[in-house]
Length: 122
Image 1 (cartoon, rainbow, N blue to C red):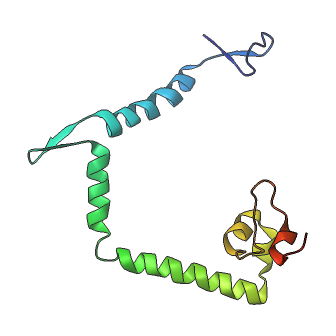
Image 2 (cartoon, rainbow, N blue to C red):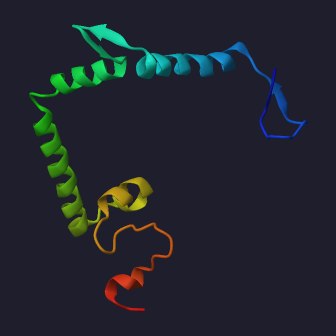
Image 3 (cartoon, rainbow, N blue to C red):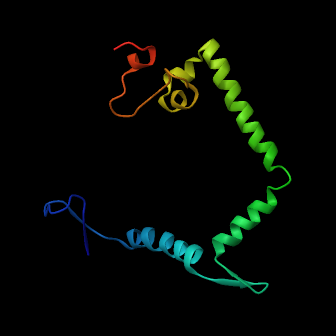
């Protein structure tokens, strides 16, 4: 069987290998098992993903709130300190700047937004 790199282009065709089939089949079978395969445990019917969620929910119960509080305090602290000090690695990285440069004049990427609208200027 041939796979097209560019649709409807007969010049660019490759043969599918067994590795290509496995790249599709293995994740597909895992997904079918996690989402569609019912398991009966203690008289209750649930999918494997439900059991995984219950496991992690129970395992994180003793320290879950502390982790959430830690993430919120850490991210808000970095944001406040960055507003005062302007870390170079945050300003130079698009990823980190979209996370930590917040506020009215922060990184706003929706269409049609003009930064002069923040100051009331037109």
